[in-house]
Amino acid sequence: MMKNITCIIFFLIVSSLAYAGKGVVIVLQAPLLNNDNFDSPAVTHVRKGQEIYIHDKHFGLSSDNITFEGMADDEDIDKVEDGYDKEGFFQTLDASGNAAYIEKKYIKLIFNDRRELFSKVRPFKYDPTDYRLEEPLQKNYPIAIEKMFRAGAFMAFGPPRHVNYNYVSPVVAQNFSTRIGAEIFYAKKVDFDLYDRFYFGGMGHIYSFNSESSMQDDSTAEEKGGEFGAGPFLSYIFFRNNNWRMTFSGGLTLNYYRSLVKIGSEDGDDEEERFFDGFYFTPKIKTYIVAKNITPAVDFMAGFDITMNIPTNISGSTPIRNNNQWQEDPAADNIHLPFGAIWSFIIGINATH
Image 1 (cartoon, rainbow, N blue to C red):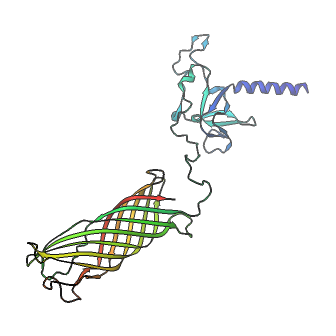
Image 2 (image 1 turned 30 degrees about the vertical axis):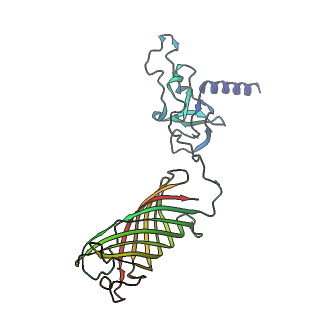
Image 3 (image 1 turned 30 degrees about the horizontal axis):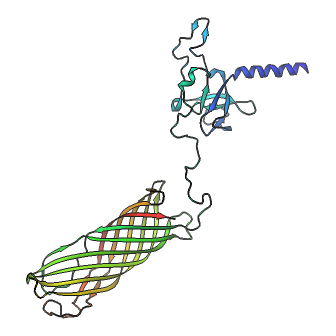
């Protein structure tokens, strides 16, 4: 019995001497490995601020230590590795007293001398083991939000349609303004989508445009118009990460077109104004990129809109007073929108709730 007690005491003394040093964990959570290589399995983990035993072989002598040869004068004897440059492993003990290994960069050795000044408690700009989500967490986390809504508003700029009234006299010169407008949309994530990519909703737009024309008979014309439209659309997010989102959408709008056409001579005589209006459908597609979290609630978006024009005739809603300036045939007395496509650059804001 006495022999066993003596062996245990001896073992404890030897273990204490073999692991005389200590270190403090400086990352959120560091693994203790079975061997000093990365292929070895982790036997346990230690947390930030915890002190663990470190084998004495990793400490060496401080230049302050007195030896039989005098002060330690080796320049490397009190060198301290720190931060990302620390490679390899420190030998330590796990909770069962077995040898284990921990990466050097996760530990600050406790020297109890001036070498403490040579290493940092926080050498990392970002803790490589910190798996916690960045604050602030999204609303209702970690409960899944069943309904997601998205809204946006943006300005649109693009080339003109180059359409005008079917003038009696041939046109010799024309000037069209830039097509300018604004659009809004509001959509909800579709129920079958488990990955928050498909949204269905409604969109609306308003555009304004004008043109000036000079005819061969020296008469002039001015057209000022606008277009209002609304309809359904479906969008799909085909790329996203923490900072960016790219979306493709398509839809159909019912549009109301209204234009005021004024025809007269250069000297201002015999001027006459007439309104033309009508309804027509236009398919629309968009692709845009969203810069997320410009503010906590608003994202920035920019992209392109393409509108397909279906052939349509916009008829006059005002009777003719001067027959010499307007088409007498009702089939020709219109503004014709030909088949084609027109693009616009869009820029605006986007929000999700």
